[in-house]
Length: 496
Image (cartoon, rainbow, N blue to C red; front, side, top):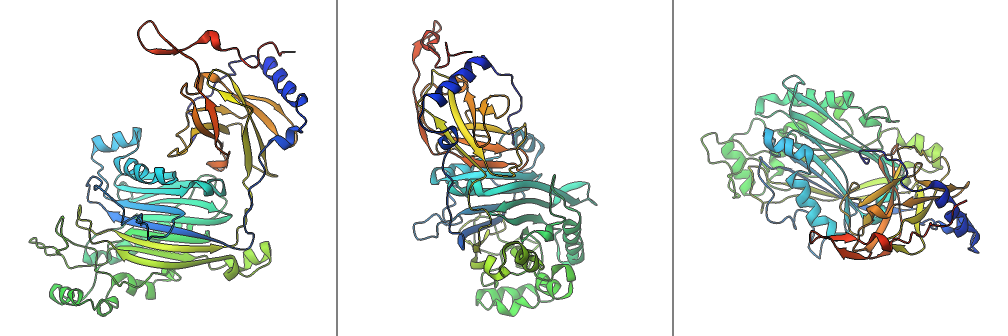
């Protein structure tokens, strides 16, 4: 994610440098001290609430509300990270092309719900009907880095994306997490094809610029989606009778995925919560009644959430931090449930709520930044930033100006390239200017975010600050325009 064009500095570099020097010499505070102090964390333990929601939406539009699915009622836990995996999102050519140019309706709907509650979209990846969205509480943004997405087609022997998987990986407080949203082949007789496709995804999927060899080399892998595994042997009447009497355990040993986990080596170590909810497929639309069509599909737990902790993490992390792996990273499943109150498709959504108990390996943000002085929409303004040791900076890094409550990384109102628009630097701190041309005239509450190209994330967020409104004059055509005569730029007359 980055602005789509580079631009040359629009103001006199010497003038700006003179202003920066004047700011430095006119202040009793050292330049390095002008940057924000680092945030602090408990170095021993951090508990993150992760909520994974999956749903085959059957090409339907979003419903009116998703409160219960996202645990938004007051009694629910405070979620730190949302991961939403959808299958069969409307992928007709008109819809798909529109979604490539703009956010798809599901992403917009989720941002409308979660952004006002303090969540920011970290990433989304789309492959035809498969969609994977991650949203995080604002306070965690600088500690989630190295975000990469990918997808792999398995439909029509790998040439068509109606089946396959979309994946996102990220470093969360230094721990590498991977999330895989899959849609595997349907029908009772295609168990082997489902297994072959998933094994191929594990072996073949790679990420740009990755330092980790394969999906299973991540510290934790979450695998979920419409996996399409069915209940073997039992007939439809027996299954329905067992489901109606809530004796789900009688079906577990005939579940194709449970059977495969005992036989297939590549599935060893994948864990899942108990299936103590109704099979989530197949329902009549807008009801909790199983299929009454002529096909009369047998109920099945097609929609699943599993996870696996890296087998050799213990030895590697022992060497890195001198502690056993159980102390460093644990995954606790708090609740595994279906949601019968949603009926827009023939599948019911499933959620898994987890506590990730971890020893944070990153204790401070990689970048600290702050707005310098009082900002006014009529003036070019200054900001300061500093980076941690060994930070992988790039000439493609940029700093965005965001309104408080922004929805996603590309939701900036203006930006500056950290190198092109730099006016001063030292060993520990640099200064960059933001042109007044991009600052909103109405002012308001804003913050700054440093986007690192190499890590594909916002590596630092400033504290919120106020921008004073600019002067506005009526234009000849009746619109409003900035009063150019009022732009007594703070830098004018301070050149070499």
